[in-house]
Image (cartoon, rainbow, N blue to C red; front, top):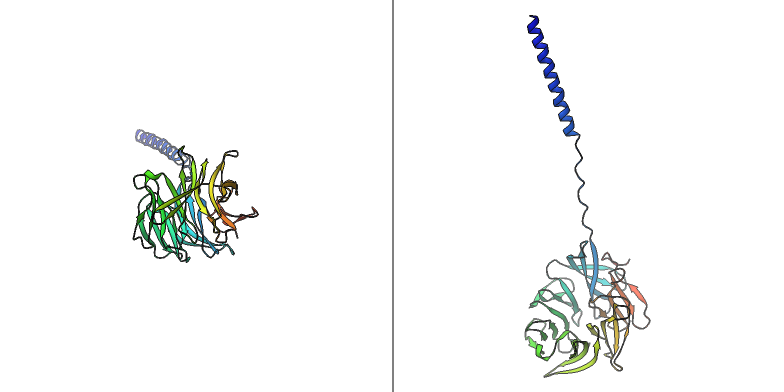
Amino acid sequence: MASGLSSLLTCMAVCAVLAGCAGCTEERTVAGPPPPPPPPPPQLGYSDGFPAWSPDGRTVAYVSAETDSNQINIRAYIRLVDVGTYDTTTILRDDQMFVFDLAWSPDGHWLLLSTEVGIFKMLATGDSLTLLKVGEFHVSASWSSVSNRIFFGINGGSEGGIYSMQPDGSNLQRWTYPASGVMQCPYVFPDSDTLVVQSYDANGDYCIALYYPHDVLLEEVLACGLPLVAHPRPAPDQRSVFFVGFDTAQEIQRIYNLKREFGVSTPLTGATSQNPFSVSPDGNYIVYHDAARTRGLQIISIRTGQVFQLTRKDGQSVH
């Protein structure tokens, strides 16, 4: 009897020790290191650019790009901002086309979209988006109020040159070929079929030239030997041509005013990008991308140099 009781007590003691060890093991597992915190959400930014002033002077259409922390475009929105009230309206979300230039029809009802996949037009309400010309590197589409033709350029390759077509995409006509020299970024003068273009001289320096696409294409060179010419835009009175150039002293890009009568260009703005800009219909103001500070849109008075902020860096209006 004593031997049996002793065996039973010994067994109970061993079980208690084993149970205690199991409990210790379980406690150590529960008390392990906490899981790592989740990664922070991506930091989004906005950059407003590619502005186009409406023919009545009341509205600016522009592209507001949403970017990640590496400044890579995630998506973009085409917006309208009222110059008087700063009210902003989004009319189109762009996830695929990558719009890099905008222009208005002469009556202010339509917008032209130069994109990575071709040229589109749509109503200023964002409706009736229509593909007019498919293809890459189609740039600077603008709409003539005289002949009701749309002029545009194709950069690079055997198709490079200046073209025109009807507003429905028909009657495609080619005006220049690569053999006649590299000509880019054509833009039609107001109330004229004259085009101002970016071209190059024999040394490879930038030039600004005028082209007259009638029965034959005539050329008038305004200036050459420039370190940079991008997106030349004519003044409504046709006395000046504005363009993005390079300030070699400050090593920044600015918008310049080239007086046709004198052939001399003077800087108008501070640092900007090679984004297209737009001249107001009365010729008194320019709206452009502020690359130095806000990444939004600014308006500068051509006469006084006074600057107004039109959109903020977060893609919204200033008020």
